[in-house]
Image (cartoon, rainbow, N blue to C red; front, top):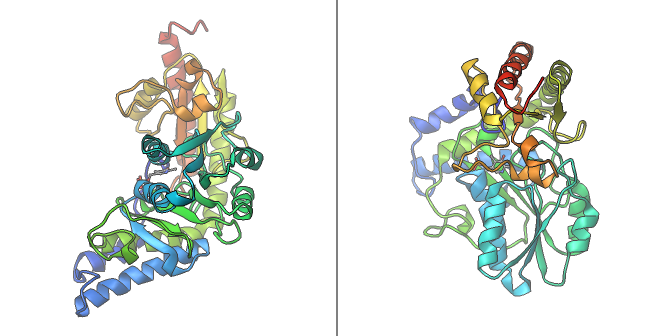
Length: 381
Ligand SMILES: *Cc1c(COP(=O)(O)O)cnc(C)c1O
């Protein structure tokens, strides 16, 4: 129930990676047969990633993670295009890979507008339009939110950015293989991908960079990835990403219809079985696998621990990952009060989840909530 954090590696993906982790150990930059074989694996994967989003293989740069792809897109573009302007537009609900990159750029003299979101975690094309200034060079808006699953109006924003000749980056880590993506139809200039969110291996990602969009490398020291990302290629990881995205896009229509049905049953079941629960995010316009609810009078962490005891892995918007007890910046941005944001629970499904999984959660969660509420000084029944 925590597939937005990571997913299980697909057996088919593992099989694709195996030869590269055993007999085919060449360095993709070597000119001998071992190297050429490794390079061929990398180029096959590049074509797979490109095909999944309607790009050309030459427009794909492999990275060490989705986080690195976000850093490379925003930091790399800002550095390279500083002469044209220093203003960037993003939103308050981005992943920290985007937010912290923008904050770092602010310290270097860039100017960043963080667009506020509505109660569903969404921004509009009109908001972006109103924020554009003379010196705006880049708009970075996530495709789908990792906490509440809201899907942004990417096609409209892409069209606007193209008309205004401003580069458009989207963090599509949660959207790839969950919703259809076409970088040309959607006028996307840069797009971030991560393998481990789509049943691929951890530690590998990709950035789509449209032909003609220039970025400064952040990692130097070699000519790999057309000098956009130095370092000997993680060939096995790259092969895993290529296989995962090809399978994910191929299976998407069936897999996502199934996941959506599981999600809806989970949402309806939770809302009807537990009193004083609110769904966070939009009822329809959300990722097929995302459920996020606020359960009043109790703490997200407490629910997580009790679910964990029952063998259910979930996540909370109030996750104190950095030792901070601040509730989720996404939920707060949506105008959800602190005390309600603290009681948030995210259940995120993949196509590996089953009807039995949903039944099991629905059999345990009401019990867990009732038990915690009984102990809560805030709850009087
Ligand atoms: C997971 C995630 C990332 C980071 O990807 P990693 O490969 O884990 O670094 C970035 N953005 C979003 C929306 C994510 O969900």
